[in-house]
Length: 398
Image (tube, rainbow, N blue to C red):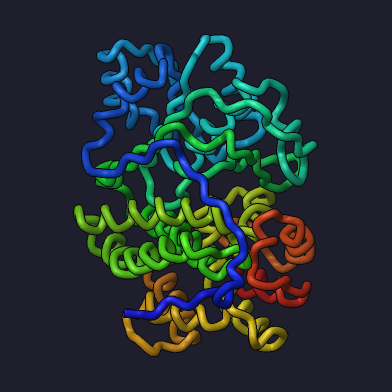
């Protein structure tokens, strides 16, 4: 058992806010409750956003029809883009859909989240997008939105943003507003059954990074700290086994809970350099988000630890590297270096490729560093990193 370490001294805890989906339902078989819940939200005609395999939605579509909810399918073949958000919003409006249901990974859920927001607020995605758009505020609550993850990685079912890629700008950016929080999140671990090992690996390491980064974040708070600790423990004990030996029911539960907790943490305590880099990498190259985060995580931990020791040795995040090591290794007294080594070994065991796999090379690193510095996720890194440190992360992740 590890002892929690407070990021703020007694009596000096910064104010914080915690917000999430209106209702979260977790448990095996809970997908069956969705049609009645959709009807309870006033839905009679649903835009059902799916991922690469729309056939996975067939049981849900049949159940919705039986409950008296007609459905229009909208498939998102890859990661969501500005154009996909426009297309989905137009489809929802022309089909007179009054509820949006997303069933799939983070791409489907983010697309559904963006569509639900734009249906209610009107306008173009670029009117509201951070970094590359006007960054305007969404003034109206989204259309009723139900999120059902079929992977265990992004935690998008409980976050208040939707990440959209812009090929023109070569970057990913977020629509972000408390109005975008789903009305209902249904997390059914049974939906992970049969997931390919590669998907479990990249999504599971995305979830782990979304637990670790908020735990080390400059915006961490006692509520997210507790969730992060629980999620890190569950991920550490089950991810390797699920990928290498198969995801049995206990492992599916652990991975689904870890992903859910990661979403709660990132939405309320921020992220860091892993996701600061992941946004521009995904915009510059055709690279899946989870795999990119997995490739970056060991180097980000290593460089952050080095920077903290060199420039801010009294920083409250430093003792957390030791606590993180104890959480992932299961050994009280494990050192920060042992924790980072455990993460690196996990990535190696799960055959996580470097960023070269997706077309990144040394020539792209200067532009990547410039874009990463401007990413919103970078703001919650434990401390600002220098250009040299950012370059070191990118180079080590190739």
